[in-house]
Image 1 (cartoon, one colour):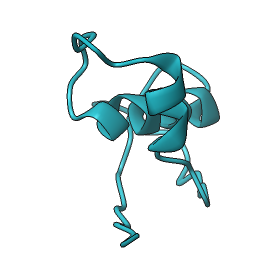
Image 2 (cartoon, one colour):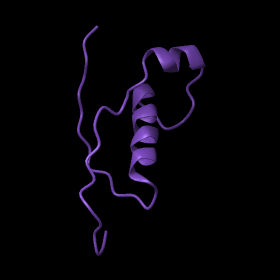
Image 3 (cartoon, rainbow, N blue to C red):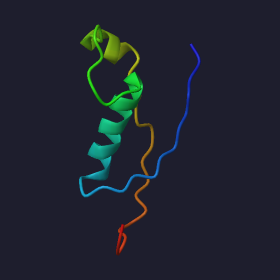
Image 4 (tube, rainbow, N blue to C red):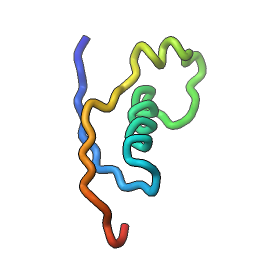
Length: 62
């Protein structure tokens, strides 16, 4: 199976690790809403994962 690697810059008021985890999970299905027929087993099998996280610090404004 081929792998796809992506890098994201995430700005969030949430803990960065949690936000990255949620984004990876949603990107696995390609949508931010439930897809008919998408089972927990299917999500787990094709789940994206966060392999590294580098916090860049805080910003004064968005």
